[in-house]
Length: 287
Image 1: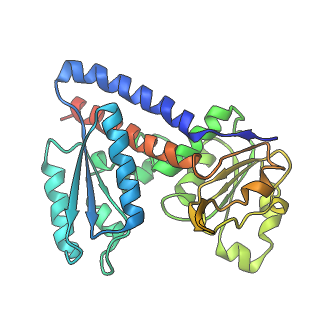
Image 2: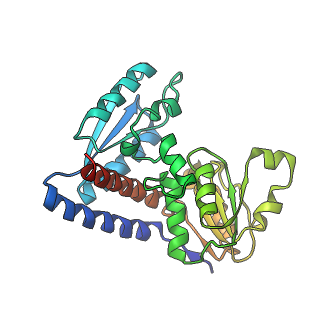
């Protein structure tokens, strides 16, 4: 049987560390960090994630403010609201929830968040710091994947890492973070699937990360015996939540695997809290 990677336990350790740091700073500074969550309109999946954020913030003593905006708001009006929060000294970090209404460009909007208040680590400045290997605030899901690898203690030097999915918030930044650790990194995407045999890549992987949003796409014949399999996907299928990896099949072959739910998801939220704490420390040291 493979090692089952317990995301809840890993997240708990991160949260305890953040809470400890926060307790020390609160004692000396007398105030706590605040996360401002911006949502436009109402979406069920976004509501679930927002509730997870609020629960995590409450658990460790970070103030949480939810800013609900009308679905008819314009892009310029949303940017103006972000600019207000950039100037608000009580707002430590800002997150803009997806999805946004048609006509609002998420990347343009989030690029207006000042980098030191960028809770998700997706501002171009913070992404650029990954390239230079000095990023402090990192994209939450890639940060969660790197934490999993660190906890497993497998090491990345020279390892074959294959990432399926090249999104701007998971696959691309994660590939850089893996390269920074001297992993031999391959990123697969729709072009790989259409122009070649994607399995030829995934079967080489010592560490396989899947983030495509397609329920149980990866089967056992995609995976090398003993590989570490990290499933980032969250999908609804047959009345239940499943990942991008067929867990029942792949778990018989993998050396270690994340479940869905209970794997990457909880760690992602804890990395968000860690980002807020790091933003807070930067702001109090350099007001």
